[in-house]
Image (tube, rainbow, N blue to C red; front, side, top):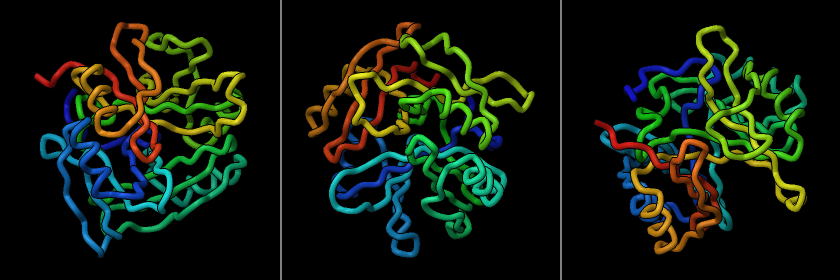
Length: 259
C-alpha cells in the first residue's frame, strides 16, 4: 500500500497506547511488532512515537498505574465542530479539543455506548505514516451491545454508513464506510458483544499488521501478554486478539510484506 500523504475526514489515522509502564511497554511492542521509538520528551508529556521503516505508526503515552488501554483516532478537519456533533448526538467530551504543540489538535470523546474514541486535526503531524502494512495500523473495530445505536452516533459524527463486510467471519458484523461520495472504502468495523458478555464495556480495538500471526501471538505470550482469541478472517488471513501485560487489547492481522 502506498504511504499516505494525508487523511480525509473520517478516516482511521492513529492509535495511542495509554501505558502505566511506558518503558516496559516499548519493549513488549518492539518484540511483537518490531517497533522502534522516538521520544518527544518533557515538553510533550514524555509522549513516545512508535516507528516502522522510519515512519511514525502509533503513540505511547504514560498512563495511570493499573490497566492500560488503546485509543483509536479518526481524522477531522475541525476538532471543535466535531466536538459539537458529538455532544449533539448524545456523546460526551473526555478531553479537549486542545492543541498538541504544532503537531495538531486532539479530541477524546466517549460515544453513546461508552467507548472512548479519539479525533485528530492534523497540522505538522498528519497521523500514521504507514497504514495497512506489517507493523502498522490496518483496521479498527468497535465492540458494542447495541449496534443500531452506535451506527446512528457515528453516522451523525463522522458520516459513517454501516454496511455488511465481506471480509468478516462474524454474524452481525458491519463495516463503517465514509459517505463523502469519493469511494466506498471501509474504514473500520463494528461488531456485537455476545449475550454472555453483559458486563463487558464497549470498546474500540486497533488492528496492526504482521507477516506471521502465529509468531506474533507466541511472542506476545512469551513477553507476558495473553492471547485471547485466534482465528482466520473470511479471506483466510490469520488473526489474533492479544492483551498486553497491562491489559490493553489489540489485534494482529496477517498481511503480506511490503514489496
